[in-house]
Amino acid sequence: CHSFSALFKCLIMEKAKIGILGCGWLGLPLAERLIQNNFQVRGTTTSADKIEVLENLGVSPFIVVLNEKSIDGNIEEFLKNIDLLIIDIPPKLRTINPENFVGKMKLLIPIVENSSVQKLIFVSSTSVFSDDAGDVDEDSIPKPDSDSGNQLLEVEKMLQKSKSFETTILRFGGLIGDDRNPAKTLSGKTNVSNPDAPVNLIHLKDCISIMEFIIKKNIFQKIIHGVHPSHPPKAEYYIQKCLSLNIPPPEFRFSSSKVNKIVASNLERDFRFLFHNDI
Image (cartoon, rainbow, N blue to C red; front, top):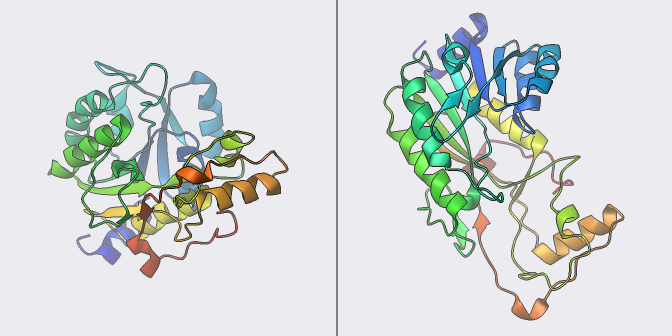
């Protein structure tokens, strides 16, 4: 199974095991889609209440909690005979008590290196680029301006350095879905800055399709941006979205306008983004 097509056929024929570390807002529907495609899927959760949900979807569930100094749960058993690992755990760097995401990954990576994992997808973020980065793509050098961006970038580099598995870094823009839209956060707020700043968003369903695309096309040892090619101005997008949701739109401080980053994706040449109307 050395070529891409041969590898994918082997994965299907042998019912390859895929592990999803973090079956949350993105990981759970991704697991469901992969099971529909005949993959065997293991998934982790930090909550015992979610075990039954995972089991009902056909996911083999494990309770695994990553801490800065320890990993609670049987991570070795979760990784046993896994071919592809997808790491999709929130860094929790914008909470009241931010955690050391780099520290967690330093504990995890050696365990993954000693497992059967051959390929890995790490869900990162376009926050590895500063807000004033201008036009950037996968070839641009990230220069974060936030703790979140700095820690994510460091983890990206750590994973790429490993010779035990092939890593693809998947940087998503702002995540939106039927039950999640940043317009709700800004609704009714006043004096909002940067009205002309372009938005960099991606719909949940496109996120899942992109990850399917990576697996099926065997796109590893790459950096990929998952961002919709439409970048309307911030004020235009949020006002229209709030009106469509029938909630109060935000009021912007137009005198302080400053254009920020536009994140491009090389996927646009090969992948069809389907959810334009939702952006």
